[in-house]
Image 1 (cartoon, rainbow, N blue to C red):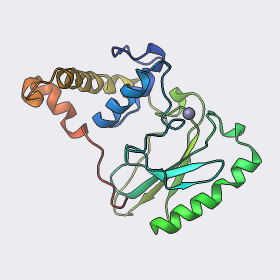
Image 2: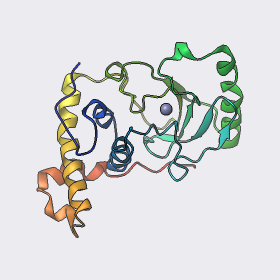
Image 3: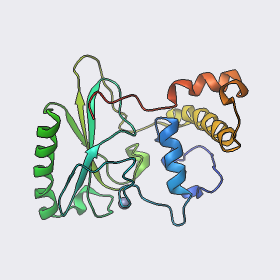
Length: 207
Ligand SMILES: [Zn+2]
């Protein structure tokens, strides 16, 4: 499935797909900062302690509370990346697999959460809407008060709909880089209306 044509100065064309799976401007900007480096930086190989505060770890896995892309209706999301950069679940060794569970137990105990969903996306991002090509387990802990849907895979129509949001974020970013004092007022109203509720991740209920 081809991604719509979109480019960002400094980001290699073959990495642009990652931007289509970002859910807010903050995350979009962080992604660009990583992808503009040469070679592009994987955020789960090189951990930025300001963004991802590792709270649980052993020789095989790390884990933290996701503050970059939490969704509403959840107490929290956790992320457990394998320390090795691989893309497929079937590449995880038996020893690595056995060492994931103790960390998950510890995390649930520390957070006081135990009911939810784990998801793990592997392989081709066009088939699973992932945003980081490094194998990880994602724990979701809903409050139970509202319906929560997870995008498993996007259609061509979804990607085409995301394109004007990315274009809007990029216009905003360029004005921000230029030090513009009032970006919201400067953007065409239809562009600002499209992106204004997608500027920051929603707050986690616990952290
Ligand atoms: Zn990695």
